[in-house]
Length: 336
View 1 (cartoon, rainbow, N blue to C red):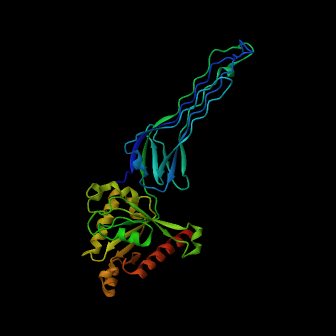
View 2: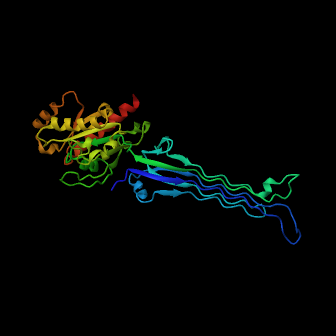
View 3: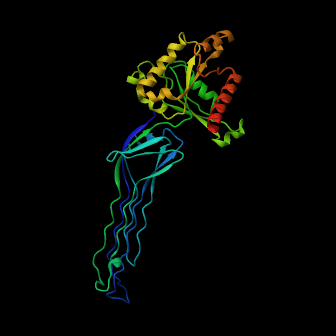
């Protein structure tokens, strides 16, 4: 089960206390202060990784805390600083501080963010020695580390989002053109959580290095009429479409009314977020092996004025053509 929302408490490490101590040894009976400083508490960072399922680690673990600084010791020994804590989250995670409303986004450009600062270690009594106060009998306590309640929300970052009604062939297509291995079966809602796949670009088009060596595709679970109001899988995964650059609208050729199918999905996207309707869109007719060439051309004419591709997972050449078209699309957009 994909966990894409979590509320948790984070606590940076407290600073260690400064020590109160005086030199006492065989040579010195009543020496001066030698209490050392406490170490600083560990900071808490959030760091992005390529694992959309990693938030499930916090399904039951709602509190994380960095290590505290060690107290100072005698002979002016400083306490060790607490180790920093790195909380792993998927790229595309939006972090909101519940008290201030301040928001951060973990991306490949900004893969690591400091969220909670550890407390500063307290000073030992040696630090308070002066010409008029040569034997201070006090030290400073370490400062507490920052504590915050944060809300994490995952919104997938992908170049291409595959959308469409259940059984439109999205999962099979993702498996065929990327390295993904989604669950595939001939019944609705086989895909119960988004799947990501990577399509290599550079081995076919060397100039792809100008914008990146791969394209990331996201298979969004099948929508149905009323999804924007909670029907079917509801709006649980609609948020993941928001951050894709291009929508690849998959429509199975064996559908009785292609235009109606197209409009159902468009309606749900618009009711969830109207800006989704402004995204670049490609119509992809799937399962073309079920039609002869003439019928396929007639189906394509229904979408006059739209950018349209067709594919069958049983036709290797159509898969190659689709990959080439998608790569060229992004190469063109990156150079414009």
